[in-house]
Image (tube, rainbow, N blue to C red):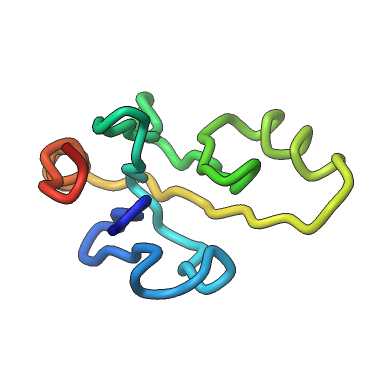
Length: 105
């Protein structure tokens, strides 16, 4: 069962493709993940700009640059992904795909 999937402009990467550390770091548009019980939660940058995404406590979080730096100052191993600003139509297409992903109901 897929528990998270990262949407890039032209591809995806999920926990079925590899570990958190294997996910491509650049060009994230949205991340969909399970939210109990039986629903989804989509992390994305609502300002259509490049955002920051980090793995903490078994799930992905999205935030601004300060949030990323705050996360990086905490103890432990870290994983940060970086969003990309893309044309509005491409952004909406990727976000809709994440929102409608049939593996997350």
